[in-house]
Every structure is written in structure tokens, then in C-alpha cells.
Image 1 (cartoon, rainbow, N blue to C red):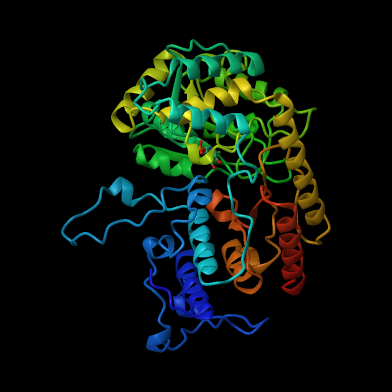
Image 2: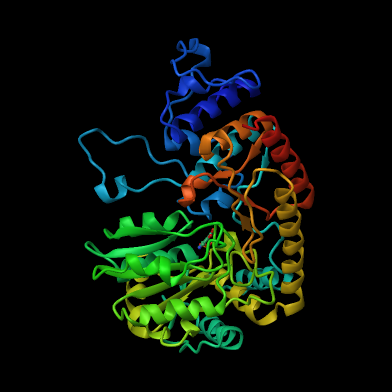
Length: 485
Ligand SMILES: Cc1ncc(COP(=O)(O)O)c(C=O)c1O
């Protein structure tokens, strides 16, 4: 998009663009206001031609002069690729209605806006990212370089190299107690996102209902819609730690229920389900033998409470045969750009996923797969624990600061690197409006809770430097004090 060249004009254009996506108000209602002023309900006169904002489209938000730098943070976090789509087709060509019904993630919208602001010279603090701030372990980098030099640059088997599949099976047996046959029950993909989507496509179709506990990762409902099935949201509450209970799940189970998508630890809440609770969920599902489980465990290594260790859903009594477990290398090993994930499950469920993959991407990158073997076989446990320790310190810092702001309802999550405080006391519960104003006035980017099915909340990712966290929390506290209702 062609933003005006001066930073302030660029900021104005960018804010207008975000505003018309986030809120059902005319873009003109979002022109910067003096501090403390409220927006007028009446449309402002059109801006002079030189100030006219760019058209408010996905592509206008997503393509910025800095697009080449890094769309990956947000793109990995519940969104699709941020490369600019081709120019609009002639009006006589319609797009697939399934695709037309799919939403772009708010995370990517906010991230696109932040990129635009940065490109225009603005200094923005962003707590939107969905990837660790530490680099991949040295052994991983070395293995990738060796693979390139050694000519491991060709297609592999669709399901992945046998070296990686064996390493995954051994790792899961050792750490999770689940036994998978490397040859038929492990499918390596180009990221956990692909694995989740393939699992949903393999299991669900028109007429099926898919249970999605909220707050949820925004990709889940959209993937379900792409499969032609119906997402059914099961709300959890902050008071109960955003945990799914049998009591919350049971009323939503119908004869059309095909699948539960269970994200544990959760993005966006960081909740880790305790084993006794998971056993109760499993006991309920035993009464519903037609219901499969897609268990997204991508954050399982980021767990800060030894008293509440992560348990794999497939390890619960009676659950192995119905569970497709999804995991990957993006979060634990900071290999987001290497695009490597996997799905494990009984061969009869993994085979259709492999069939889909054979027609989509064939296989994951051979170089990344070699790096994945090194991640599982060479990275020492102490190195993994050191990263978790650092992340725990950041969680404690952010949660401590949130607890000190009167009116913010928060909690201390046990896993992942997110926290989802409730700030509904501000802006009449309009979290998108709050995020927009926060970005406008403080240059601090958070993701509105509404994109995770958590109205009134904001998602904070603490996977960034301590310095940036301190600055961000100062800004947030200041903003909430200044705008106290
Ligand atoms: C819950 C969840 N699942 C899956 C993914 C995708 O991970 P990958 O990078 O392996 O595709 C993400 C990324 O943000 C995530 O938050």
C-alpha cells in the first residue's frame, strides 16, 4: 500500500485502515483526537485529498514497505500468509463461498499495522508476537547447515524422513508415555498449523459440529469452516482459569458432534489442564465414542508449574484411539521459520491426513527435518529448561504488574507465553477500541480478545525482551490510569 511519506500522515492512514476493519464505524470517526476527547457519533468531513487514507482492504493492511522484513510472527499466530494477493478479480468471477466466509486473523491485522507504523519511522512496542524471542539451539542450526551442505535438499517421503519419525516416536514415548509406530502413526508436516488443518479436513465435513473451547486460537473456527463443518464454541471463564470442564462441555455434545479441538497449554490463555480434570473429560468422552479429539500440544514444553505437568490427551485412559496429537518445533525450539510440525495418532486417522498432505505440500522441507532430528536428539534438557526458566521470569513480571493495576482481572497462567487479562471495565468492554486507542496514543500493540472469542480481554505475549516488557507494562499501566472509567 502507498502510505503517505511523512510519519504522522502514515500513522493516520494506518490507524484509519485498522479502525475500519476493527469497528463498524466510518473510518473518518478515527481521526486522531486530542487526549481525553471522545469520538463524535457524526461522520467527520472527508479529509483533504492529500490526507485520504488508503482503501481499507486486507491487502492494504498486509502489504507494507517492510513486508519483506518479517511477517512471520503474526502469520504463525492464527493467520494466513501475509504476502499481497493479486489484484481484485473481475466482478464476474466469484470466490469459493467457503473461503469468503473465512476471516483474517486480528493478530495479523494488528501486526500489519505495527509494521506499517514502524516502516513510517514510528517506535512501536509490540506484545503481539507468537514466537519465542530466543534463537534456535546451536545444534539445530548446525544440523540445518550440514543438511544443506550434504545435499539433503530433495523431496522426502510424504510422512517425513524415517530418522525424524523415529526421533519423534522415541521422544513422545519417553516424555509423554504414548507409544506410536514411527512408520504408520507419525506424519511430519510443514508446521503444526498444517497438521491441525489436515486433521480437521480428514475428520470433518458438512453437517458435522466441532467443539472449540473459548478462548481459542483463531485459526480453529476458520479451519472448521473451510472443511464445511460448523464450529461450536464452548465458553470457559477467567474465574475458573479458562479451563474446560465436563460440565461446560457436556451440554454441547450432540449426535452431530464429530470432534473436539483441545489446545493445551492454551493459546491465548496459557491455561494448562490438570490431569484429574483431563481424566474427567476423558470419562465424559468415553460415553460418546463417535467424537474424535484433535489435541494441539504445540506449547507443551513451555510449562512453569511442576505441580501441574502437561499430560498428553492421548495418554488418558481410552483416548489413544480417538486422538490426533499435534505438536511441532516452532515454540519449544524457536524454529518458527523452519516450518516443521507433526501429527501422531492411530494409523486409520493418520492415513487420511497423509493423503491430504500428499496433494498439498508433499513433504516438509528436508533441511528442516534434519534440523528437527538434531532438536530431539542433540539439544540437552538443561538448555530447554533454561529457556523455560527465562520465560517463567517474564510471566511472573507481567502477571505481577497486571495484579497491581486496580480493575484489571487477571490470573497466573501455567504455560505457553501468553496471558489474557480482562480489561472490560475500560472502554465499555470494547477491547478492539481499547487496543486501537492504546496503539494510537501509546504506540503499544496488544491483540484484542474478541479475536480469540474472549470479549473484554486483551492478549499479551510476553515472549519478548525484559526491556521491552518493562516499557510495555509502563505504557499499559499509564494508559489504563489515564482512561480510567
Ligand atoms: C495453538 C497453536 N497451534 C499451532 C500453531 C502453529 O504452529 P506452527 O508454527 O508449527 O505452524 C500456533 C502458532 O502460533 C499456535 O498458537
